[in-house]
Length: 362
Image (cartoon, rainbow, N blue to C red):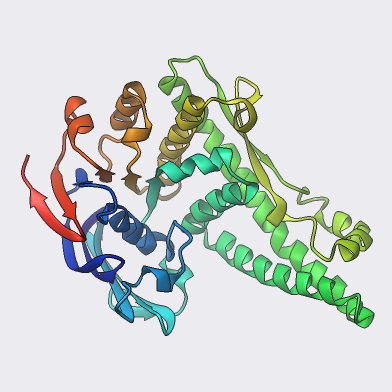
């Protein structure tokens, strides 16, 4: 998989700008708040159908305009593909693949595979459980349409069930419909739990090996999936805990309460890991993601590195740069010194200034 070009129109601080990328390493540099991250966001949008920053679509459209347009051209197995995304302040986004409109954003998944690594990814270790669930969902939705289908329907049923639980005090007769919502919740939820477990097990096959390489063999990193309830016990738990859920006025069990636990040498990384250890773990996780996608699809994903070199010490920088050889990479940074000091091969360089792009020879 190679991204050939990206065109942005009225996208955040860009008017009309066009990027032509090369297969190797493409570097976007410039001062902070000039628009480098916006390019990373746009590429990821074409892979996942949404911003990785959890921004609303209308927030992406430049302030004085009503519409924004992303056009990405990629090459996969010598076949050229195109993705066109129109965002509108007045309504839903529209997406076309190879100039043919698609009905749902989920139909976009699998055309472009992307792994993103940004400073915010430390929240996978340090943040709330919702951020770790989002990490699993973003990865699995790109790769597995069955997972996507069950996740979408689970969230719809969860919303309906929670609404029902809030109304029961005033209208107890609505409780007659609760068993049907529970049945659907279990049906979709079991698939999610099972697929998250397989995903974590397979990720563990590589992440420990990669992490030992990054830490000189001193640290053993392990990821544990901690579901709020097992797939086997889901139905029984929901039935036995109905009174408790009615009192709480919310669904207390299911994939929406799942979490991941990261340990190094048996110690919980979130509670006891240093910032350096946490950064190393996220770096190992992202490199393991790349291997996971390769294994599942036979395709090499695009790697998006958003201002992460400044977050890593010299040793971790070298490990990262060595680990991405042969992968098309888009890197954002404020300056080129770190890359040049590491004698890293740069294939194309773009200078970004106030939403304007200038190709630079180095």
